[in-house]
Length: 213
Image (cartoon, rainbow, N blue to C red):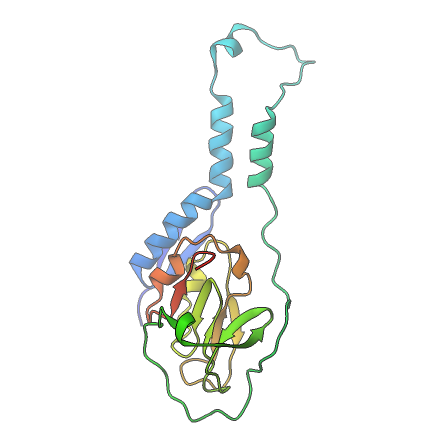
């Protein structure tokens, strides 16, 4: 079994784990860019740096230092509540169960031209599904901007761990030959197009399209 590598953020205490050191380094860089506690410390340090006007006079105890509106807005933005847990939303016109059992795992990479060679066959909780599909053994490609070929995916979890904005959550797909759960892009609209999930996917089943592509 591969050994886990770990990284602990010294600012917020978050623990990142992965068996692939390169993937962990990518996760660390993204976390450092988005760590709310780190940003708050930088803002506090900038505000506490004395200026000439600040050292010239000392306010009385009755005076309350004012915080610039821009700083207040930035602090509020960085301390916003985390994304809510996704719930079922949007239309669902396909099923994950059926009689399609005579299938084998498909090798990657995902076909980057699938939007011109395949047709949408339905939606699942508002997420577009591109055929052909024959559940449970053949599930097609899911997504519009954040796209995953479910017939290639082996559920290693690298994309879920790498995503800094929690686009994915596990979806049970019992009976599929490649894996019985898949990374479902339930929060596809939250994607920031950092490409982390596409870059770390071992079987290369993820493709990210910029909006409008």
